[in-house]
Amino acid sequence: MRHLRLFLSILGMISLLFVSMPGVFAEQGAASTPVIKASIPLPQPMNNQDDPKRPGTWFLGATPPNADPQKPPIVFVQGLHGEAQSYWWGETEYHGPNDMYALAYQNGYRTAFVQLYDASGPARNPWNNGQLLAQTLQKIYNHFGQKVNIVAHSKGGIDTQAALVHYGAYPYVSKVFTLASPHHGSHLADLAYSWYAGWLADLLGRQDEGTESLQTGNMAQFREQTDSHANVSKNIYYTSAGTSWGPTFSALWFGGSYLSQYGDNDGLVNVWSTQLPYATHRFTANLDHDQMRKGSDVFSKISADISRMTSANIPLTESYSTPSKDQMNKTAAEEILAGGPLSEKKWVEENISIENPAKEAIISVWTKYKDTQILLISPSGKTYSRSSKEYRQHQEKTFFKGAYQQLFVIPNPESGTWKVKIQSQKKDAYFLTTHFTGTSTMSVQFDPTVKTNQSIPLKIELKNPEKYDLSTIELQMRIVSTDKKRSTLVPSRFNGKGTLTPQLKAPAQSGTMNVTIEVRGKTKEGKPFERNETVSIHVAK
Image 1 (tube, rainbow, N blue to C red):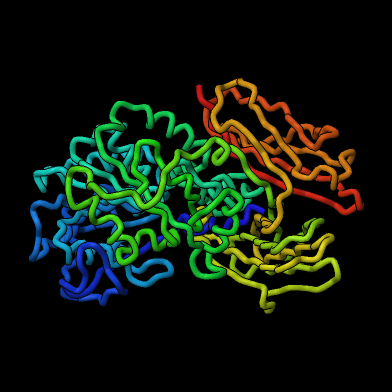
Image 2 (image 1 turned 90 degrees about the vertical axis):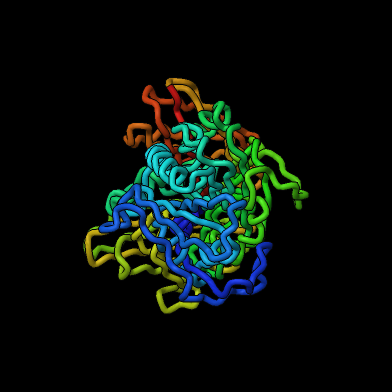
């Protein structure tokens, strides 16, 4: 199930601070968590002092007493829903204060920090943020009188590329080091824009441009527009990735579990999504998405590259390969989705079919209100509630920022029909996901970019068709089109070999369409079976 906790501050996933005494850490890294030293001056806004959160504000870090003019200044660019202050020298989400600024200061770097549109309102797409960043980079370049190097976390790496490649800011920058940037999008963003998530998203009003831009279909288009552009070769790029899911049962942990069906990930972004064909992939480390912006975790890994204008002659510690088409365009559907409105004080009941042994089932419900009541009832009649040890609750900070996620982590769930009962004291909406681990049931292959009015190739395949009564298996597709209108296609049947290539046509309007694929039927033992998958497809003119 598109177990999204990630919906988490995947994208939220961010905040930070400053660090300890000069000389404690060598530039090549910090061996332990630094001690915060209050004497390190905070960065100060160079404009908009009356409102430092205003987009376009930029902050100048204090000049270190050991400032090295041979080291290019560093400009830090934060990710989705981020603001400079909390992101780079405030608290991280899970790992204490961020010492990135302090470590840069201690090691003699001059620094600057930028405020993009996300700081004071809904997140904006890379085009809006990129244009603003390009203007700001020119001001920073004029201040220092030399080119800068950029360190960008998460979506900040994509905004940076938009600024350099499409808005002509490349003359102000030498090198770019992206930290866990979803250059090929995140399946969590796809989930946020799926059919069943729509009711909750509409209620929250949180489907912003920034989140929408991170759908894999949108990023496929961005890559086509960017990677072949003449300006892409004007700067040197480095990429990096993480593979930890953060603290157990945290938002990142749930995002990591969901994204695991697509490969290794840091709780918000898959490793394959962080890579670029013309970049040096400098490292993949056992770090979560939150740690990937923390100085004491990554500064030692990036310092040799950002300490000079030219490329550092550093041996690669791992091999790099461009993400394969299968990695990006083939999904392993191990989830069930549902969603809808909630009337005041009325119970809604959803059924979840678990037909095969699974290592774990993660059943999540997102709602607007924290006190919405959720009950989970097993096939044998056992009831799980807030008081159960399997229960967790979080407030979403990324893709569904502001929503509350309640979930149950059920090891070795029993087969049969599970029931989820939901009741709210206020008008609300819900998005229900069930994600299975330890199973391999169905795969979906598709083309993430197509032309308007073009036929869209899809291939849906059951991994072990001999286990199912194929005469009962039915396919349903629910579409959120490029104009945001919803439609449901007429159901179709699988062939005798367990594969289906349904006919789907791209709309006449360009944009991104989100397709939820539903497969239902019975096993040969007569047990109900269901799997869903959500794919994002960009429709170009």
